[in-house]
Image 1 (tube, helix red, strand yellow):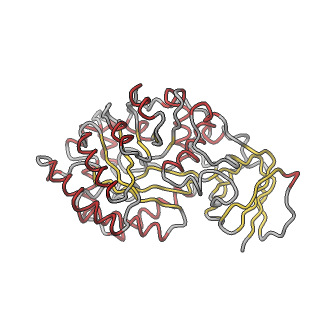
Image 2: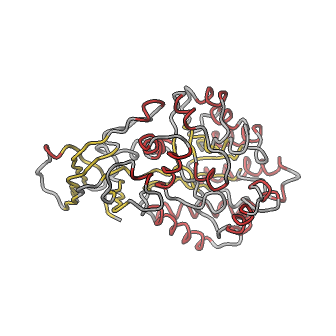
Image 3: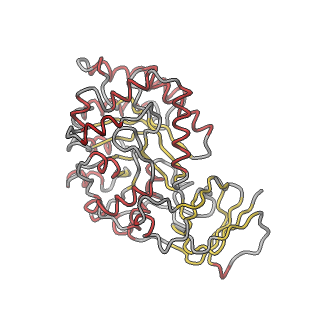
Length: 410
């Protein structure tokens, strides 16, 4: 079994931590200065200060002088199985159209769904695998991938089978989420109940039986799925063993947070529209509020009130929302930059949100999100940088030098 020793680490970040980080604790980020890290096989074996470095036999030694080592990011909200880009809509928004106006003209999610339905499974797989490689090289080691660009029985199943292939082909930890309730297909606009019936009576039972998804998601927001529709879809998922996640309150105070917590959702995501009622609902729950600042940045909408949420005692997670229409980037380092500049978060809070808390948001906190013995050796080594604050500061520059997944350099 391979034993790799990383030595002379300037700062070993998120060391020996294994719990959700909430409220004022989010500003605390444990760092071991002048550290070593021992990896055995696929797992972290031990960590410590260079004054007490072990002298046992090792297979490989990596010198990390003047470099930081961080746990790989867990990106708990992405849509990276898609067919084609949507830069035309980007140009439309530059010229003044809103995201909702574009959607009403057949753009947005429906645009992606139309393309995906005519794209082969192999083509979708190759495109998504390329995006996974791109994300890995900027420090991401775990990804949650949603369906939702199929919006038909056959196309949703096709998407989930692509995600299953990605799980088999990639070394990264991947979770699959069924998001058939992403939007209403054009043919169901006048009969919404029939589409909800299709999801509840046919797709959810089949997906659960075939083990095609880990989670069940709904876009509960103005112009998309109502609270009552969401309630029915999440109830059906729970019945078949698919734990809820939810898109909520991106466009309005939709009631999505409340219905998500009611169903014990693992996370409620977006949350640009969050007030006292939503915060009160989340406090004391086991639901992780997950913020996607890349979406607010790209759509030029207001950012979620992260500062208010953290100061109220909540945890928050960060994710990229990588998708072709509203957040065409999976670079979590840039997500940290946005969190610091526009969400009022410190670099320490942002790193906590993108590692341990986001690991919780995708159900993998027991094995990922921090650098601790017996967790997977999913981590990255920075280039020579002065501090962890340099990571969000140096936006546009990839500060990641080496990435290790399951104990192996990529």
